[in-house]
Amino acid sequence: MKIETLYFGSRWANTYLLTDENGVSALVDPGAPTPRLPKALEGKDVRYILLTHGHYDHITSVSPVKEITGAQVMIHRLDAPMTEDAGLNLSLLSVGRMTASFSPDHLLEDGEELPFGGVRVLHTPGHTPGSVCFIGADYIISGDTLFEGGIGRTDFPGSDLEDMKRSLRRLVNLPGDYAVYPGHGDATTLENERMNNYYINYLIK
Image (cartoon, rainbow, N blue to C red; front, side, top):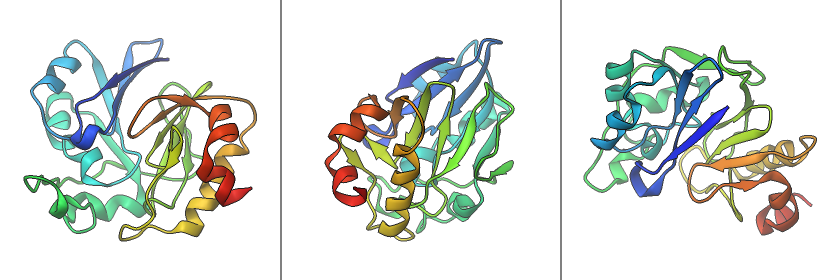
């Protein structure tokens, strides 16, 4: 799987473009609108828009990307209400009051295998009720669940610290190592976070 990191989102949220061996692409967490994003998608066969959760800085460009590509929008069922509610997706708090309103094409479930690149869904609530990680053979797109040296906030509406603890435990208990591509900041590895992430060691060990 080829993974490209596009720093186009609001508040430096990461947007990822995944392209499998057949040339089929999925865009993960398209954030704030920018003319550079459509240009980055030129010549790409983008069939899926995958959302790790429903906060505005990860979903604001869903509608324009869908209009350009016709891609299917996928989000966990518990975060689906956030796609049309400015209070739930926190866009009311955004600079410039960015808005997002769309209807998902598919509601994700824990353990589901997507029709793309062998990617499966791991439900990791805590930051939001429907937060998910997308797991491939050797990588994890972790959204706002796990960062390099940090974890997602649990003080937003719908956040839950106890859920976050359980989700982190699921991640660190995965066998082997993975490259980790978070919703904000730099990529890391699961083993590095097992060993060095203060929050993981403080919360669940």
